[in-house]
Image (cartoon, rainbow, N blue to C red; front, side, top):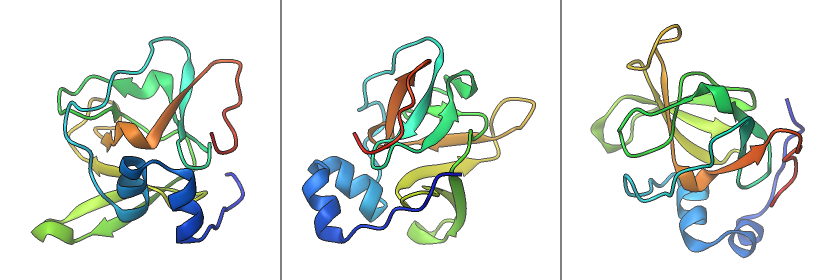
Length: 136
């Protein structure tokens, strides 16, 4: 796992656009189907805030839920109980910088049966051969 990153709220606000800040630092959610698709091909998905490797490209699948979906994490993921909005969910955060990414649900494809439903604005696709480490 990558080393932890700690920044002040002012530092995050200065580095991120308003929507990315709202989703990743304030546990927001982007509108469904609002994020353009990611390129196909070998690679991985990194945290837009810190560059930590989060999901492998081969774990991505089309769930038709309106957000990018993955069947398994690739690393640097923390899960937390989320009781907001009168629901019981499992929140997914970046281990390295604590960015809110989305939630995980038990309705995914085999063999894991999991669907990591992730805000597209919280991710950056990194083609195979590039490291993607570090903030964009």
